[in-house]
Length: 366
Image (cartoon, rainbow, N blue to C red):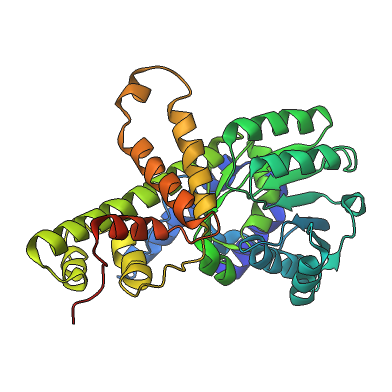
């Protein structure tokens, strides 16, 4: 059986398969392919790993009517990929945004229809949200719960609060509506390219239903656990992101101020050594050494995510809370930077805060 034929069969079965069953199918196929490649003396293909659902098996979206709410820096390009795919498959796609002009611009890019009100989304099978905070999601979900039909599914791509997500999920479930949390990582560039990493939280049957839609804007998709768990993974990811950035900046400032090491030279050496990270390899060279500070993710949103992460840590007064000290320190830096530069400043401005406090700019000396 050829790869296209196999993908077509998997796509046809996908609505009836649980995520676990789909993974079992993939593992069997990968094992057979590995045996064949070994027999033919060919190199082995890289594995996507346990829990990860490769985008190549997504197939065409099966939902006949979908909607995307929230046309921000992430939502707009993600909606473009998803709506275009649904329309190509013969379905109906709508977009809605509080500011109507943004919805009209997004619709022009994908061919989707503009919903004038949330009531226009009645009859949609799957509704995506990508909003600033979980508070906006909860308010929208309250309205949608009186509009959507039994069996509809809400997929929240917001970098949200897992506690609020569970509460919203319980409210929707009481109305016969399912919910999946689906935060993404990859920033505006990844959203534009349709290559974000998507984390899914929810029941297996609900995840399987929305999987083909999620994969229209994803390079990698992982089902991490029950509802709310994906939002928890995302905020921990973001506070680790910021911690790596602050640690890299502090290290470069020490080298520059104490030993006169060119920050560009130090960064290049570290990036060939064990201290490297995405922040030292990409953010520092592109946003800090250039003095741009314009990656595209707002400081206020990053601080919000990190507050949620710290709230998870402090949710219980136990050994974990007592011994987690580095992450709260990162949050303090971000909040200080937000107070100084404003919520709309780029999150990389947390490095500017350190530079100004130390009286030294991290710029190449030559």
